[in-house]
Picture 1: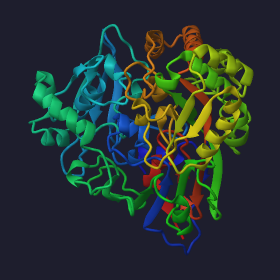
Picture 2: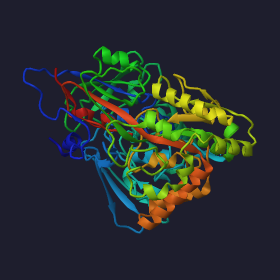
Picture 3: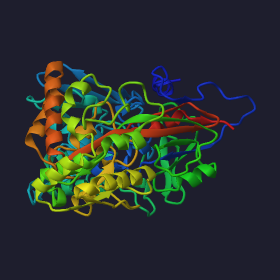
Picture 4: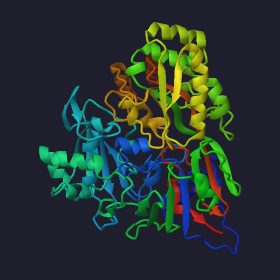
Length: 571
């Protein structure tokens, strides 16, 4: 067994994370050739670096289809994937990282992996390529965020080579560099070049040819979108143990073993992914599902008899992301809403994970947007949350009067069906009504967080990065980025220069005193400006069917499918 496969198998058993069937099954059982995986992500984009990809949860679906130098492990940590290649920091005047793709690496269409893929990722994510917009230059590429990529000065790459040297700007340092060029985000540059009618992406981006760059951006933004129509599979080659065979609303996303994969062959040849948009309850009762990874309480009357089930707190933050225009154009209106949201009651009824640890993650309402509850910094940086336990009608009434907003109607949007979030909105509506706020359930089966930007709703109820399902990591890049000025994930269009500067400094300085001071300042600022209201660590129900071996829960953005190529089902 290769080093990577062993790591994926034992991942976090020592840490006590839920594991299924680590011992071999009973004799006389046969291996099932296909495993159904129900996960409450949405299959909307293959491109895990785009705003659509991150906010729909693509990393939880395509982590073993598009590999990268690192992936999010089951405890939220970044884990090196040496099957894809190696990455190491090297001495230099500026921060420098050397990347070497695996010499055997080849896409499922026969084209070798190359440093062109890194150049495309950097160009798309850096914010360097812009077009004129209403408020000044706007990015050509609809990237989820530019964290780390914006700090890169250049990527040295000969087109088609396996080697790349990434050199950061002399005045920048990016400590969490292992969050760059990761699984699900390293896209096939040769496909983008072919569709954009370019010899390769490196030359086009080096010369800055406006027409070529625009065509690349158009494809990067839209060419990997997965809607209801049939896919042109030539645009979706794989660099991992699985490749896409087909996708439809009726039959789910069918992943099959990638014959050109150079690492350890997947244990099971076919995985069918059932996203949030399908009737999970029916799929489970039809015996079409072997692994379940959904928000606790989100699927009404879900019967998991015969499964090994645990409900654990996730790394994603269940939260209300607020608009900064319309009814929430005034900070007093946002504070009024936060004061009446019954945070403690919501946690008590909907946010408790049955199998949470005794201290830390998931043990109380979450009082931070960017610091995890089991962080050593958490108790010291969250004092500003004290007055927002919620359901404080007198304080909310006073703040609302100061806002001059009258008696506003607040539309809360979320992706349906979701029983827990429907109950969340109902409890908020009941708590806020006496304060003069009318809360409306604007959940819909076709909801997207972009509806907040468009003014169709006033708040989004979702997890970190506005994702409906698996979300969050220890590095917390998506959480921090989602409130940065100009970030693709910043659907509420919050902007605060001091917050942006703090997040830059946090990424560059690991001095514990500095970090403590910066995190405290950031949380004080966010509780004052109220771009969002954190509720609790998102509880995840993760279940493995009888006879499922090697399943290890991943209550993170990578989802429980982080090691799906090791799954075995015997019946």
